[in-house]
Length: 193
DNA sequence: CCAACGATTCGCT
DNA sequence: GCGAATCGTTGGC
Image (cartoon, rainbow, N blue to C red):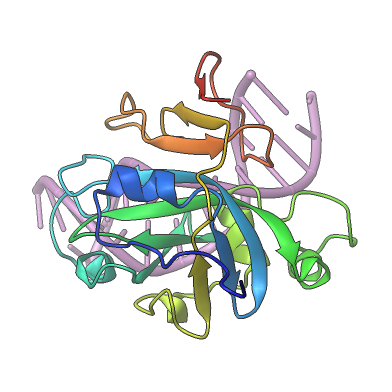
């Protein structure tokens, strides 16, 4: 039919949310592609921005499920998150660029068709022109659309999260094998594919 | 108030 | 593979 897929279920455990996001079509102001890499950040999670409770920066993490949480990383990069249950969020680490590739390349300062557009949270934020103004907005709005895949994609990868020092042993990074990942997954983490 | 620290990326060795 | 860039948030004094 004309349906682009089932509605997305935001109100679920953040680990399941991070996995179910894989294969979804993400568009920000009409530009984007398919989510291929995510990380889960929980409420009682030393690596999470919400670990020490509500602050001004992480306030949107405690907002309604389906919200947009944007933060500035290393003073340079704006990273996009999907808010789940209170204090939980999914960092979108990589998408496969499909819609508006020329726009994304221009935003990244790269020639069309050359270089990584949206593999890595900082690159993705730049390619999708994410700003702190987007913090607190909602997925499902005109600006942020998210469509779940008809089927769970094959080739699920599971591994430890990237770039953190606390709770690094938690296998809360998820990806789709063979896609444009920000970094390779450790060996032996492929399942079902 | 001040110092330390990132959920990163890019360029150079 | 390693280190600088860069600045808001955080925690301690």
